Length: 523
Image (cartoon, rainbow, N blue to C red; front, top):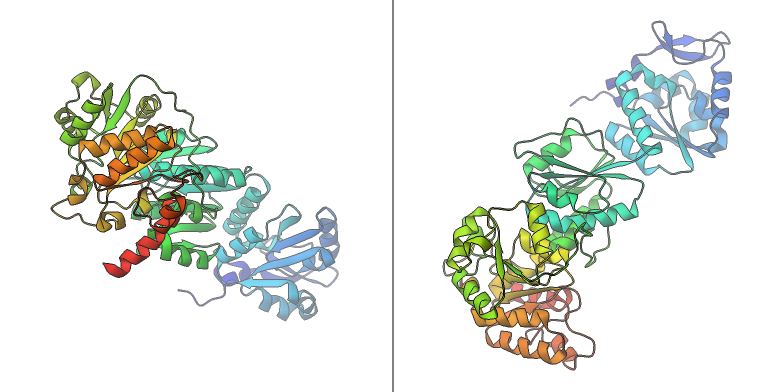
């Protein structure tokens, strides 16, 4: 790493010192001069008169002519390390006048971040003429200032998987609402671009191949968020050199936030103790909420139901999420109605095992857009902790999510008509990184519990809810409803708050947080 001052490294100090016709120092390079050969002060005054803003920030110090004539309008000078020493040697009086306004940087990206943090409708930015000595630097700064004055560019990278992409869309939409004039580009891996394109308000969706490591055509971004802990996403983010990087970064895939590193450090401590919806919102600097993505499709029920039998594409760790297809098949047969099976091609045989007729077995036959259209017409959706389940919940379809060994605190689907079932086991609730060979949590489900879950999901009265809740409790199954899960008028409200293991918690993220901490002490 070079020990030279930044201005020298960039070539700014190689300009030659010359004298103007009226005896003032100027800088030149061969036949090129960066100030008037006659009177650089008069030239600076003329230039300053064209700036209408009451506050001006100058990038680069040079010999300080423009900065001096701005007077009280000068907000700050963002200079390159080494420029101050040159000005002090050439024009000590000017240096003393400007000293309090100079902020010197030994790192180019830190200077650019300081410029971005000074950005305001009331502030004009000026590039000091001597920066033209380094043409590539001058062009880079021009592009940055052009972005400030036209449209700020922001990229959000979330490559996979489907469930995580869906859960990040609402955060991106809220970020766009807070920054309506910014251009938001969402970058994801094929085939998840179809999911992102359903989200309203996102300006651009770029779908990259699975072996992509850069996006050459993407211009420089002011901020880039990397929401997924994947090395390839880090490579892609680095390829377009954003001014600010936020999210997972480096070989260690640690959380960073160039805007506020303390924020990243605090979020790293709690990120595995909150729903991914909330984590993505907080990573973007938003207040966590239970809002769901605003999608181009809406729930309009027709005369069929949708069932999904798996999670992932057959990997061993996903298998422990799955309830046996025979159990689900028995439940939907008892419940009645038309059931259409969806999912990956790996789930085709599982749907057959459950008794789904071939004409109703859509496993492996739909893309994400087709799947969304199918789910948006379902009277009931029944599935596992998976992408289709998160999609159903976001679409607003009545969604019954069957959880095996994954934690509902981290992975609970969020939607207006969503219910989550899980075996009443501390290890399942906490979430297992590697499932036990017995898979007791997944094998605890029976058709009786699944039907009781459907009844609770569709219950219209308090008595119906309590009746279904009693059946689930008797089956050894816990149930969670996002947001407010029991009406205020429920006579058992106080009891439920005091003992969340009885019936349904009031709020998964509040009522169960205490239990999470207790379990951590016990196990």
